[in-house]
Length: 69
Image 1: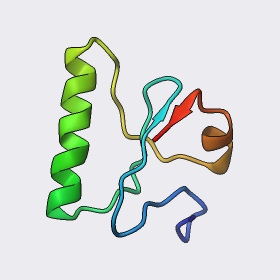
Image 2: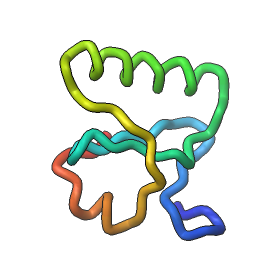
Image 3: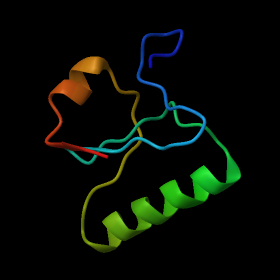
Image 4: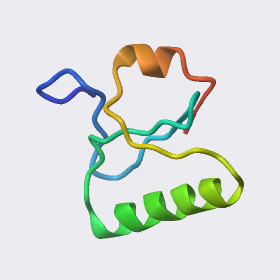
């Protein structure tokens, strides 16, 4: 799903992560439970030495990701 600006957006019951250059979507919804889970994944990734950021993503970013979950 894309937002009004054409960037990838998440749905109400999930978060979206891609692995390429440790990027994930800034179009993330701010629900309390989702925000907590997203923060936990990001903290674990940083603890493992991975670079974490939240830029806006395009469909191109998803199609060219090494992993998506």
